[in-house]
Length: 492
Image (cartoon, rainbow, N blue to C red; front, side):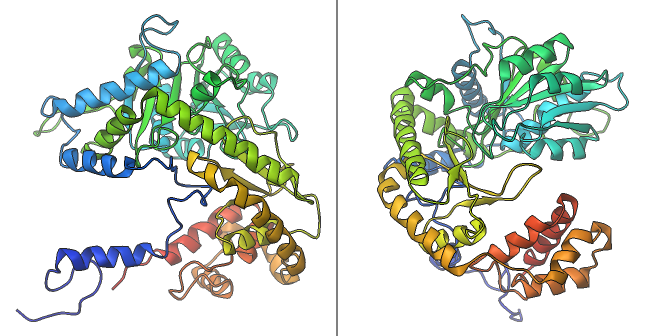
């Protein structure tokens, strides 16, 4: 056999396991830190010793189990039912409640849960040729993705620039005869505020429309915070009119990715979620979720995590998270030029600035340079650009370090000054139609911003974020899609 070049994932000759793991560890060195309490997005770290090892071992036990056929692998069915039952009890359902018949499914993540909630609502109304859903502008972008994939029209309701919540009367006014689903968030991801679920569910129920509460982000945190005395407003199945809820276990249940649960108030509401097909010569396909083949690894890892932590563990983690939120918010209040977008009521600290000499995108870069990885959020309608912090229990031991780092970063951002884009580039961003973008134009722009030529993502993103902030939403979408396309190229 003739040797060929050793490129990509498939070498001419197999490699020793230790060498392969060494390569992966070397690649991981460029990633953001997933542990240690300095990354405020994307990952959820409880800081519990031994939990990673337990979850990994449980994952390995069931990695090759296939969720396609629960009758062949009853272990997976038992663990799925246990996860659904735990989520239902935590969110106001189950025996002895006003929603005793709650059922659910385990999905790969929040986006799949939301897609299925929209699908179930759409398919329950086969009489409608042009179904619609109503959601606050602050609802997760996965609803727009669901509407796009499922050919459902999305009607958005603006949020108040002060309260960051939708007006229930505006939600009611947006409901049409073709509306199949009304959405509320508990909380909204961007700002961490809980929508007025009771009022929104009431207007949906009055119109005989399903109401989905997207609690992917906060569904496993809010109940524990409530038990600790936090004034958490009603948002779960205890609220009349709430017909489905989604909650991600890979967020504040601290399970490895990706595990989410989609709950329905009763089996009849869930029924349209299923897909079954028998009109072919193979096995009859029956899928409760989007995927057919599913590894049992994530489900087993989530099951092990919940069993290990227990209610007492989650209460302790929620208390640590609450204290961390308080400390981070205090640090923001103590830093001149910054203000909170909302008083924290969940697990989010979100802040902005009214100081024209303080560029938030430069501030994000300065925080990154100091080892603090935050999430910039761009201007939207009447809402200013902001900085989002998703707070987990692992942040608590680092809170005392954050205040001085934030003050230093603010001083450095002021010294650097705001990003100033060339006038012609600003004019282009404000006037260029998305369909006018050509691959050459995007490649040239990406090269000028340091996003092309195999260089990967630049260390400082303020210029990129400033350009995106200046672009209308449709152009921003196209630019980002093209930029990511430039980054995702095969290793030949």
